[in-house]
Image (cartoon, rainbow, N blue to C red):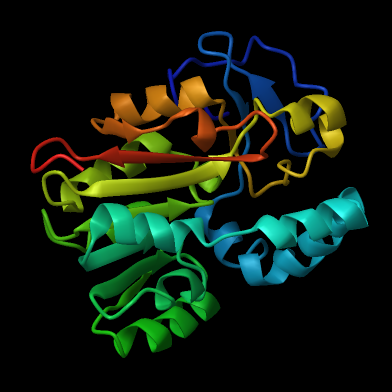
Length: 263
C-alpha cells in the first residue's frame, strides 16, 4: 500500500474514501489531509493497459456527459493557451522540458526561440512527440518520468513544464527533486493540476470531472500543492488568487529552482 506522497504517513489505519471505485482505493491522509490513491497501477500497466491514447476516448465521452452544453460552450469561448503564455513570460527562450509530453502537441506550438524536450511513458506517443521535436532541435525520452529525467544533464533546462502531470505521479516529491537537478538556477517550473478544493468538486461530489481512475493518483488542494513544491526544494514565484480560483477545476502555479535572476 502506498504511503502519503506528501508527508509519508502510512494510512493503513484509515478507511477507504467513499469516492473510491474498487479495485481502486482512495484514502485521506490522517497526517496532512491529502486525498490519494493507495494502490496505483505500476509502470508496466501504465505503458500498456492504461496508456493515455487507449483511455482518453472513453474519458472524453465521460466528461461530455458530466458537462452541460452551456458550460462546454462557455469553456470554449473563454479558453486561452495559458501554457504557451506562461512559457513565453517566465522562460523567455531556450530548452524547455515537458514531463508527460503526450504526443508533443503542447510544446510544438511554441515559437522558434524554444527547443522542446519531453519525457513520455507511452511508446506510441513518445514516437509521435519525437517526430515533432526533432525538427526543432529537441528530443523525447521514452520511459517513466524518474528514469527519463535521469538521462538529462545537471542544469540543462531553461524551464520545465508539468501540465496535467503531477496528479498522475505516484512519487511526486522524488520526481520534483529529479527535475530540479536538471534545471538551471532560477529556471521556472510551470505546474497545472486539478483543484480538489474547487467549488465544482464540492457540488458534484463523486461525479466531479477531476476524478479519473486509476490515472489520477493525487488530489491536491492549493495549500498541499505549495507544501509539496517547497518540500522538494522549489521557491514559489506565482500562485495568486487568480491562479486557483474556487470556481475553476484547475490551478496553475509558477515555481523556480533557487538562484539566478528573479522571474
